[in-house]
Each structure stands twice: as structure tokens, then as C-alpha cells.
Image 1 (cartoon, one colour):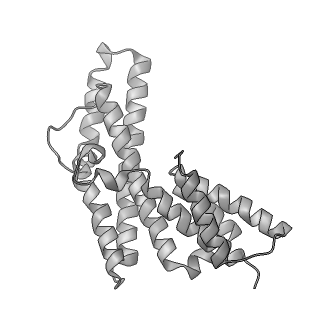
Image 2: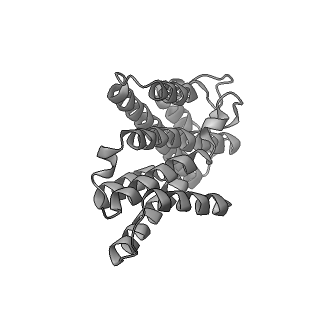
Image 3: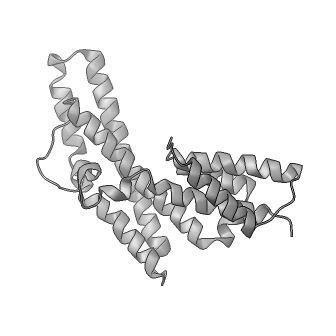
Length: 217
């Protein structure tokens, strides 16, 4: 979870209160609790959970706020890439995965999937059986995440490819650029896109949209 945003949270809450004044009611209290949980999910990088509960408790918020919907979808893609990069770096550090020695993209990892698994099996006589199974399981989890990320990216691109807004095309361009790096977390050109601080803006925009939607007329 991201910490250290108390001052900003107080300021943003004040802005929302002035923009969307409400009288304090039981419903308002429940909405505030729900929106707080959704906001926390985003700050923890769990965009899926935030989307799930937003659609459950506030089904019209995302339909009525296209910008917020797009930012959530784009942030989910970024979080998937971040998680994959962390898994890749962890396996490389532990010596369980060979580096291809260049800044190739993740498509190389997927193409080499079967080869990597064959390598693991061929070396099993030299490894402890439990360690081998754990390594293969981790490798399968990593490859499955890569596949899911590619599929999600294709769906995201198809959904917004005709969107005329410049900020949308720029955000997609930045997000897809991450896949050109085998270690985007440590690539100075794109590492800032994966910084957890980027979750804050998305969380605040969704939280504001929820509170405004929940405010009595």
C-alpha cells in the first residue's frame, strides 16, 4: 500500500466536499466506506478489485465518466506489466530463468516458453525435485501472466483505437511502450510509468466520481 498521502487526501476531500456538497446521512456514510475501500484497492495496485466493486456498488459511475473508465483500464494494463516485470526480475535474481541478454520484448519470452520448460525438465536430475516443481510452477505463472497481458492489451487497443482524444492515444502509446523492455522497472525511459504514485491520480478521480454520483440533489 502507498503511504504518505495524508495531506493530499485531506485537500482532495475538501475539494470534493465543495464540489459535491452533501448532508451527512447513513447512505452517505456507507458510500464513503465503499468508495474508501475501492480507492485503497487501486492504491494497492488491485485494479480488478476496484472495478469489480465499483460495478457492484456504483454501476453507473464508469458509464457516466469515460475518462475515469479509460484511466482504470489503462492502469490495469500497467499493473499487469509491472507484476510481470517483478516476477521476471525475481526469477532472474534467483537464477531460475536465463536472461536473453538484450532489451528484447516479452514476445520473446512467450515464444521461448516451451524451450524454457524443456530446459527445466532436462536439468531435473541435478536439482531437488521440490525446487524443480516450484520453479516450473513459477515459470508457468509468469508465462500465463504474459499471455493475459498481451490479450488484455489487444482488447484495450481495440476498444479505444478510434477514440479521437489525444490524451487517450498518448496514454496508450506510453503503456504499450513498456512492452518493448525486458526490465521496464529499471529502464529510465519508462520506469516512471510504473511508479506506484501513478495510482494516486486514478484513485482520486474515481473516488471523486463516486462521491459526486452519491451526492443527493
